Structures are given as C-alpha cells and as structure tokens.
Image (cartoon, rainbow, N blue to C red; front, top):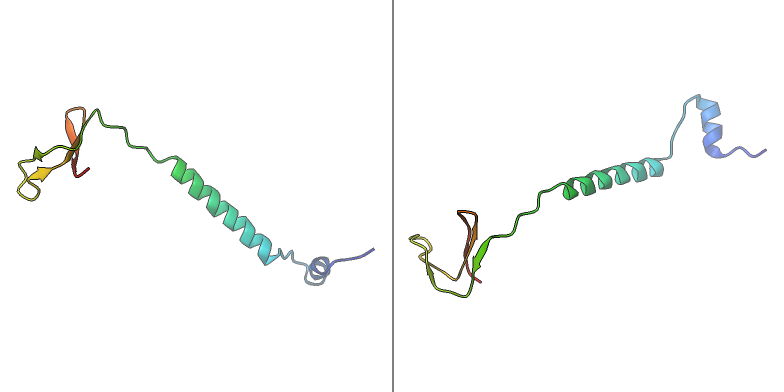
Length: 83
C-alpha cells in the first residue's frame, strides 16, 4: 500500500496539515462569492419620469447658469447637465 507524503507527515507529527494551495483556492472562492453576492444586492437607480435633452435650460444656479439636459423623478430634479 502506497502512503503519500501528506499521510506520512500526519503520522510523524500527529497533526493534520492541509496543502497551502488548497487554502488559497478555498479563500479565493470565498472572497469571490462574497463579492458577487454584495454586487448583486446593490439597489439599481430608478429611471427618471421626465428627461429633457438637447435644449437650452436656464438653471438659476450661478455656478452653472445654463444646461442642455434635465431629468426629473417625481417632484425632484435628479440631474442637470449636458447631453
């Protein structure tokens, strides 16, 4: 009967040693699965109710007095900017 090197180590030391590559693969898969679960749980933004594009819109904002596009969701302006 053939006894592999890891089994010989177990018998000699009395301890169970797992292979470092197996530990690496296990923890890599664990981290990857956690990452994919977290990205799947993020809330996606809802589309705007009204989008005005390719226009010249006065914003009453001294930092950006004119805009080309505006997006509105409900009663809120959610985007002001360029096309």
